[in-house]
Length: 320
Ligand SMILES: [Zn+2]
Ligand SMILES: [Zn+2]
Image (cartoon, rainbow, N blue to C red; front, side, top):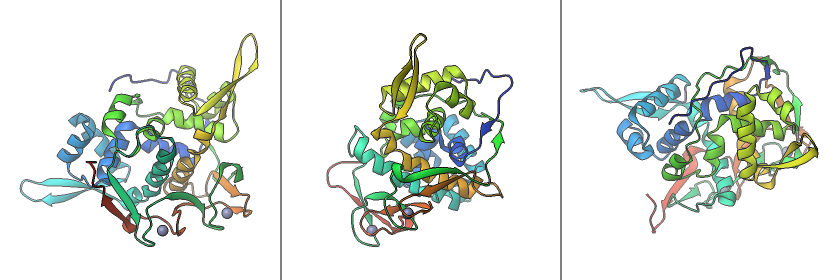
């Protein structure tokens, strides 16, 4: 839990605003994801969250405070004497549920860890096991990366990047040991910098300098994240110039399949952090020629998946 990083820029340049960026400011952090997973699995009290996540108590306290300040969680008194509180998801926190559905979808295809949760999720509306899909609310088709166009929206602006919490660490051990649902995707989602690099790649920025400019991160951090993303198959590096060697970075099938996670995050970010003028980026679904309004839907009946219409069946064999 160390390796705090500082941005060496003395004059930070302006970067493009985007709801993904804002959402990653809140969620792009491994301890935060661990805590949210614990709460999603029904652990609402401090001691239970602490023992499930195995994070240090000060770290749990700090992240819970942040999640309360960000309006994702709220404290409720459950015992008057002595006063004890439990953590509940707010409507804004519950609105993150579709993100977890997209994480599960991606894990199914790409995770190396298999089913460690030991439970089966059922869509109560249709009775089918949950197979989440990213769907277009206009045509109900599955949203595929090649059918999306990114357009500038009315709320597009530039902002000074304010990387306030210098707490990006790559605690893969902690993920491997503690997280049940999103073993592999949490590695990427839990790293805000890596998320910003992927945003650039998805939106057509492939060269080092262009990504640097877009994200406002320090060049050593960018170099580190590019190496990690290539090593883990999220980006493919192609040489486009010799001496000095320069590379372009492009998405892979694995990272294209990850895109719905960021799109749903963006949708959430637009809802809660959008400017009054409207969203900074508008997505267009070329298959139905409409503005894309994406949702996490049931692969069987196409209805929206909500926390309230999901049933859980514990598997006979194991799980926690
Ligand atoms: Zn559509
Ligand atoms: Zn269904």
